[in-house]
Length: 616
Image (tube, rainbow, N blue to C red):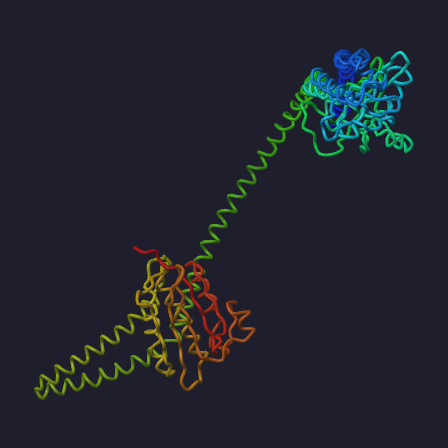
C-alpha cells in the first residue's frame, strides 16, 4: 500500500529532476556557446591580422621591379642577348634576400622572359603562363592575386602580380610567389582549428593538414572543368570536407558537425565532432577565414552543471519525500498503536482461552504418553515372548533328535553299569575302572547336549555385546548336528583368519542362524546328498554371512512375501511362518539386514549383514 501511494510522488520527482537537468543543460550550453562565440571573434581578428601581415610584407615587391631599368629594357627588347641572364641573376638574388618561392617576369603574351630559378632544370624560363588568372588580372587591372599549385614543381603558394609599365604603356607583368607554410605551422599550435577558403570554396590554408585542398561546398562539372583549364589546383581531387550545418546563431555563427572521413588525425585539438563555426571575409581578397571552436568543453561544462542541477532537484525531492513519509509514518504509527492495543486486549482474551485449552490438551497428551509407554512395554514384552516362542518352537523341532541322541548314551550306561557290577563280583578291578571311565565320558557327552539346549532355551536380555561370529555359527551347527547327520548333508563352512566380531546378542543371533540353516535343510529334503554352504566375508565395516542351499530355490510369490508373518511354503503342521519374520526383526534391532534371493548357480541364498564391532 505504501509503495502504491508513493508511486505518483516518485514519478513527479523524477520528472522534476529530469526537467531541472535538461533546463540547466540548455542554459549552460547557451551561455557556453555565447562565451565561445566571443572567443571565436577574438581569434578571427588575430588570425586575419596575422594573414594580412604575412601577405602585406610582399605586396609592394612586384611593383618595385618597374623601377629597375634592366627589367624594363628586357621587356622592351633593348637589352640584347644577355639581358635575360642579367635580369634572371638579379631576380635570383632578390628572391634569396626576400625569402620568396620564386620571382619571374612575363611579357604581354604570358611568356616568361626572366626568372629567379633560371639555373634549375625545372626553370619557368620560356614557359607560357598566359592561362593563369593573375596574369590577365594584372594586365586588365594593374594587380593580380591568386592562390594555386605550381604546374612545374607542384608547390602551393600565393601569387602577387603587378603590371610593369614604361613610356609606351604596359610592357609586361612581374610575379612573386610567396609560401604561406610558415603561417600554417604557427596555426597548428593554437587552441582551435582555423582554415582559409578561396572564392571557389576550396580550403587553401588550414591548421589541419588533412583539411587542406578539400571543398566546403559541392563542385559541379563546369567548375571542375575551369579548374582543369587554369590548373589552379594542379588537378587535385578536391574531396568535400563534410561540414554539416546543425543550427544557426546570430552574428553569422552556426553549429556544425564534421564527421571522420579517413584515418584518425593526430592533432592537439579535436578535428571531428560538433563545432561552432565563425567566418569572416579577408579585406582585399576573395578569401574567407573560418574558425572552428570545438564544443567538447562546453558540453562537459553543461553536463556538469546539469548533473549538479539534477542532484539539487533530487535532494529537494528527497527531502520532500522524507517529510511526507515522516508525516505519514506518524499518522500510521498512531493508528497502529490503537490497533495494537485492540489486538493486545483480544490476544489476552484468547490467551486465557487457549491456556485453558492447552492445559486440558496437555493433560490429555500426558495420559496418551503414559498409555503409549505402557503399550510400548507391552509390545516389547510381546516381542520378547514371541522370540522366546520361536526358540521353543525350534527346541520342539530339535527335541526328537536330542531324545534319540540321549537314548544311545543311556543304553550304553545301562550296559556298562551292569558289566561293572559283574566285574566287581569277579574282582576284575581294572576292567571295572575302564567301564566307569566310559560311563563318565557318556555323562559328559549328555551334559554337553543338554547344556547347549539349556543355553539356547534360556530367555536372553537383548543387550548387545561383542560376539565372535564364527563361534556363534559353530554353536548353531552343534545344536543341529543330529538333524544334519540324519539328513546326510555336507556342510561347507568358511571363516576369515581374523574372526569377525559384531555387536549383538549371542543367544538371539544363534536363534537366527538355526532358523536359516534349518530352512535350508528343509528346502533340500529328499535329496540324496544335500549340500549347504556357509561363508563369512568382511568389507567396508560390515560382515556378511551367505547361507546357500542347493534346493529348488524361491518362487516369485515366495520372494515377494519372504518376510511376511505367517507366510510359509512348508506343509500344514510343519511351521507357522514366523521364523524369517522374527529373524529379520532381530537382525534389524542389531543395525543389520537380512535378504533372500535365488543364487545364479541354483538354489536359494540368504545374506545376513551386521556392522562390525569397533576394534578394542
